[in-house]
Length: 369
Image: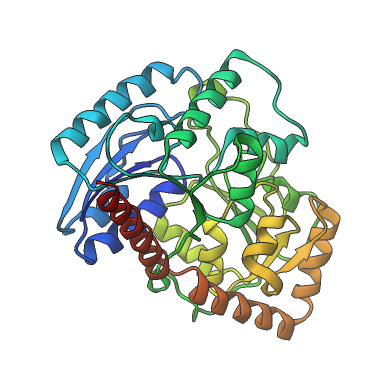
């Protein structure tokens, strides 16, 4: 089987693509990977070395959620059409909405990782204001979804948001994201430390919640401080770092794994999180999870996490303190999260479920022909 997969190098989709592509290639699938956003840094490409049956095409075309990206989307669509003609894939696995509208006779699986409209509603509690850009964005997402053969979301909650914003889908499904447990160390000695990972420029991550009260332990915040879209540079939140609060900024994968292995508690503060790979990474490192009480976290983590009242920094402090003061409870929740992550959110499981979806889509095409 030959599959063309699109990705971007700006956020978590690159990590997701790494796990997916590596797993597919190991199972004998021929993959053409096309990335958008930025040309990857050399350290982002180390995993590609030695992978057979992988044809990687990096580009710097702007992403659909970026301002002033219309010309880039038109150019990148033409570029993709050329790659499709050249490689003749059996299926397109598209991790951006807009390419679902490509006029090709190939099954198109579109993955709804996140969306500006549902993001806005979660952050602001209402529909985004009307503007020329928002109308354009809604139109390209709607067209991509309507032209997709099937739509996949990383959680039931995210699928429900997409259908609420853009209408029900005839063919759709949920495939939870996954990580490879061997990349993480669940056996390291833990420090008395709280960790949170999130983009500081993204108000949906609201990592500032951990800065508003002293929880009694050192708190480490790791994440991008600069918005990837130049149009929004300078709009990021400012954060005061003093006392036991340490702002690490952007970390590479090795640095993050070290932080996860050392942290005793992971604080998941997001108010919009269609999935959240960082929680899986924390759980695979045997961190006890303290999570914002939002529907997607409840769906994904059930009773393995300790929840604080939605968006409430005082409740976050109190929940962390409850775990801080009860070693047995910390270990119990860390073990529960670890076992759930290994059972439900492994990369092997994710890859197999996508292979099953590919087989179904290509079989339907054969029958139709």
